[in-house]
Length: 305
Image 1 (cartoon, rainbow, N blue to C red):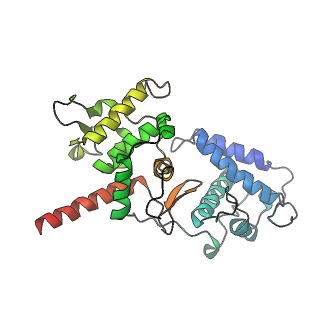
Image 2: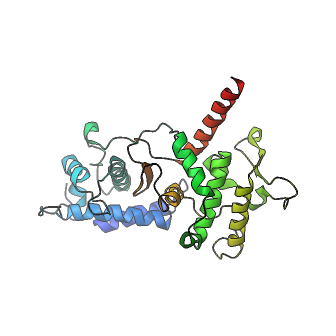
Image 3: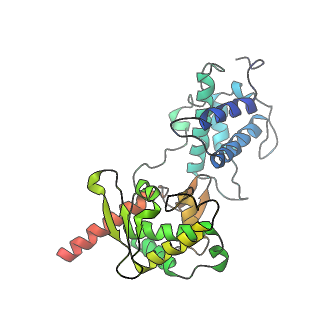
């Protein structure tokens, strides 16, 4: 395949990024774009011949072969933290981004086929376990305990930390789905100023799931504190969304990892999120709702029996 007249590596990446930025399905945010640029820059260094030990002849991005791609996935990805192991999840993320960029180049007629997709199945990074996970009672209880502990003054100064603390209280206490959590409006919070229990009105995905849920005093106080901060924040004051701003699950979990370890099940950063060490499954927002549902069923069975 000749590569003399086609786009450079930077040009093909920026073309793909512009395409994704205006996508109706899922536009790429600026923060996502930075993560993708980091992946592409790592790929470019490998194309240029940079290796952990020594160097290799440079290869044009359009002339790569499946064995070259496998070599990159196995040995070309570096952890941002010196000496830290690159997880299978991270390798899969890199591979998926490359697939998307090269697919776009094929769609635009820049290259005839996608060499990333041509990698044999046995050489591709393992697929992340799509099944849901349940937090163990020990981890769940420790998270609840940490939310009840005084917040560190340094963390308390960050408005997003105040939001995340209130958001996590709602997440653990009510077991809402991610869509329900992100869809809560300020008016969904019903506070009777001590006259009766505060509550949150949830508009579910169907009319049968519309409900009003009572919340604890701790959770009420957390939301009140967040609304006070939100009202004085240029970035959040005008938004009707209760927990305004982007909600990244890895940053919610970082609230815990910043403060202490959870029963030696250490949380550590991956480029796209956090997962529990030793687990095949990367913790997701849905897992909190799933765990809450299981706990209700278990308690109901224990009560009946």
